[in-house]
Length: 469
Image (cartoon, rainbow, N blue to C red; front, side):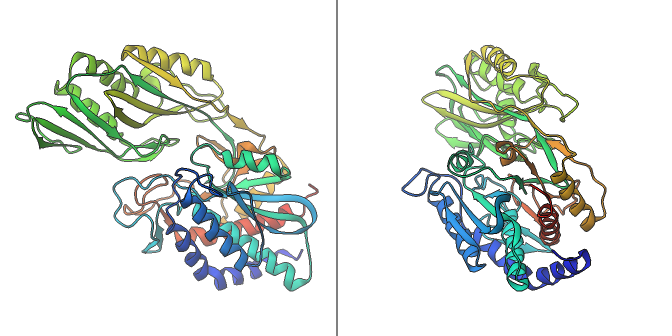
């Protein structure tokens, strides 16, 4: 294509010339509330996701990329190559609900002290914009040099990564498998394995006691930062704590509100589950009946740890970090409580074992456990030429010698024969207090990371294009 020094210089000029419009385009995407909603015509994941896809298509068309809409399940943009074999990057435009605790508008891009904040900045609209600019670089390079890429470069933009990944299932039913695919939906340098995923719901018997309502959480894969219960009782003698607020609702109804610290279900260390705060307060202050206390005690056990050790499912192996388990969403309808869980598990435990443990825990709460479809762990060897190309690009830009890793998050990579997660989070990043993590309040990232990632991705694709796929 061209020697490395010339390519580096060209990349640096491109980034300098395009960085302002990159963040303008990111702002346009962040402004779209693309939480999944009910399907409509040409919008299988709701109008918000549809609008985000349309916005992304407008950006890609302005860049003169070759675009296509896969029935609203997924859209893509190509730089056609001499071969129809594809090197692909896949990100997603859907987001988890905003949740609570924001200090800025979650659906407006906020810039502060070199950082950008907004729902989707890190997961995954920011990476989506970066990959589109990566494609723009190669489209302009080919046009200006009169050359053609050896392989087709495809930018895939999904719409249901956070809620089931039916988008990629649909896409792969109607389109060929890429020769290699990376998803910028993890950490640098390269994630070559993902834990399995297991979920379900603990369903109580119909309750007719002191509890009037109990609600918390915004998504099953998010540690809830806010929860509340309404309970009949006498407020005298009850005191608020630093994380639980007690208020009188009148007519003998007390509101117990828990203020926790949210985060992604795959990395629950350091989070504080608001549902657990409320359940523990109800138990500790004897505000409920014996029947209700059985279910609340089950919740206490469930959420006493984030590694599953509190009910006997702690597990780890040589490939992955230990199992994680969180309670995501609780609701109460017609006296029935429903508590969802999200478990990320290594190869040392199986879905049937998890099902059995959850059923045993449910029985302690006089409840039943309704398990959902499980996904098995995903793992590929880390010494392939494609992974080495990604690592070399990362090292060339950062000077770091970080090694490939496995993770607890679930990405699109597991749906492809030859795929990895490839950034764009940095390991052990130290951000100011006003910057939150993905799936939490005040989700944000440094602007410099976007520009660094863009250069890494361009160099990686340049190397990948030289491989005999």
